[in-house]
Image (tube, rainbow, N blue to C red; front, side, top):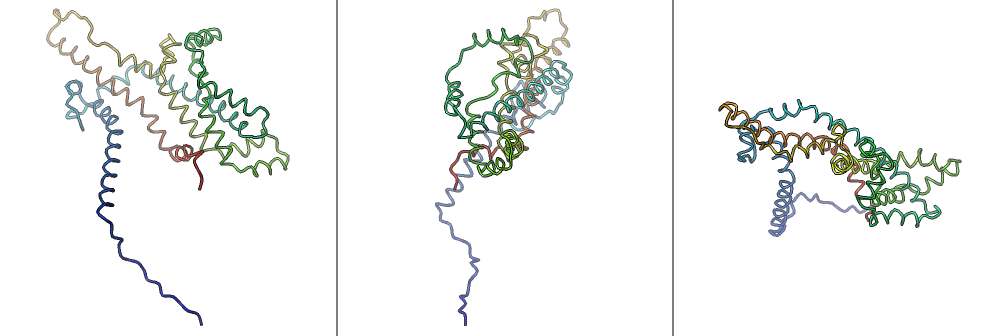
Amino acid sequence: MTNTIPTKKLNHRIKRSRGDVVFDVINITIILLITLIMIYPMWYVLIVSFASPEEAVRGNLYFWPKSFTLEAYGKVFAEKKIWIGYLNTIIYTLSHTVYSLVLTILPAYALSKKKLPGRVAITWYFFATMFISGGLIPSYMLNKSLGLINTRWIMILGMGVGYSNLVITRTYYQTSIPGEVYESAYIDGATEWQTFIRIALPLSGAIVAVMALYAAVGTWGSWYTAFIYITDQKKWPLQLRLRQILILDSTQSLDVQNMTLEDQMEMQHQAFLVTTMKYAIIFIACLPMLVLYPFVQKHFVKGVMIGSVKG
């Protein structure tokens, strides 16, 4: 005869103290405020870009434009230089991302092998680059001697690998892929290249996505390298073109006295239109990264947790 212990379903709600409720309210309020602080600047850029030039200059925009217009976007899309800069940025971003991944993934995989000769010395060699730099003038002289000045290659063959990215990727290979997997491949006669291509690389989708995102975002938003090394405006990236527009002085000295009232009003409208064009270009420049991030968010969250304490 077996003794059975009756079980009761606990349907009653757990009573929460007043302190718990206050804590939740404070937490939710803080999170909402932080979210608003992060989202509102981009929302402000968006609404100003769709507002009329006169309303944008008055500065009375807060949540929604009173007059909705696509004039700024029409002006931007009609500007050939903007599209050339956009195309240049896409080329630079894709090429540099692939270049950076090759220079990061391969040495990180090699440094993850504890039996690699000189592993510590090589790691310190990469580590030294965080603190030792030749400076702008030696870098310019070096790039000039290599024939990279005023070429597209200067935007692609820039900084290929950073020490922090290298350490993150190396940690991923050390902690996320069991060593027994490599050992079984070696027993089956696989070479180191075959092990990397057929085992390590297919299992490193998360870290590849994270490193690709880092490289892409950095290259997409870069303008200083082109500002220093590129004088041909046909090779300028979008961000450098955006900088030129942002610092554009619309208050040119014109002979206003000989203009009619209609011409003066049109000139003022065009000057105001520059403001909305700036915000439209900012939003267009940020849009690809905003669209890309949701697709790599899953891998990004996993990748940034690499190296944390495992339970």
